[in-house]
Amino acid sequence: MLRALPALALCVLLGACGSAVRYGIAGTPRAELAQGTLQIERAEGDLRLLTLVVDQLDAPETQGTDMGHYVVWLGPLPETEDDEVDFERLGALEYDPEAKTGRFSNTTRSRYFVLRITAEASPDAAAPSDLVVAERTVRQARARAVRREENRPPPVSPAGPPPPGPVGVPPLR
Picture 1: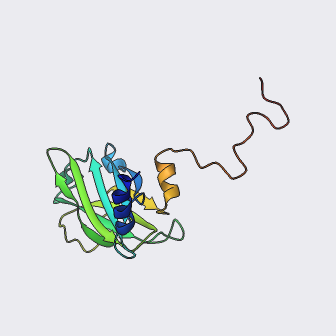
Picture 2: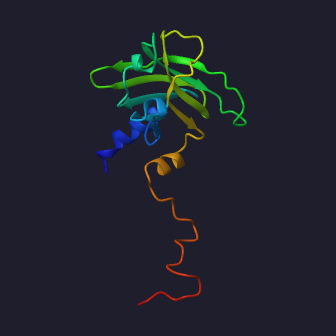
Picture 3: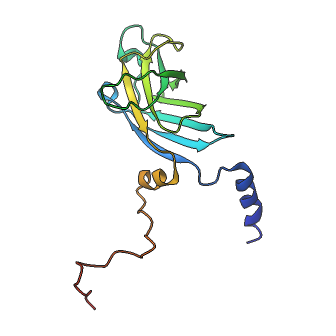
């Protein structure tokens, strides 16, 4: 018990214990084999640290002529499916062509957003191209999302677990 106190104190001071939420990311039809993880952690103040890793991602040059970079964008959730979203460029995905892996890390104040990765001619593109290789909508960044994403069962209600069979039928003994 006493050995755990320093680690617990550090977690309380940093506010980092149990606060990471992971979301799976799948490629679009342009990059069907791409898959990855978006991890969201609390950072200083109201900031959230986004850490993105994408595997099995072909080189951006395969997405079109003059495409040489992947760029990560963040936009607000659209109110309807037909709404246009104004995306903000977060930065270039660090792409390793030998491993076919992309990595990215940055902070945001947003809790609900659309994260998009596009192929671009320049890492400083002013707006995202239509060459979307992966996208993820994040609607909540709380502990409940962690349980769902990691396929954990939901917590048992205060009333206890559900009965073991149809209502009114006693369990077999």
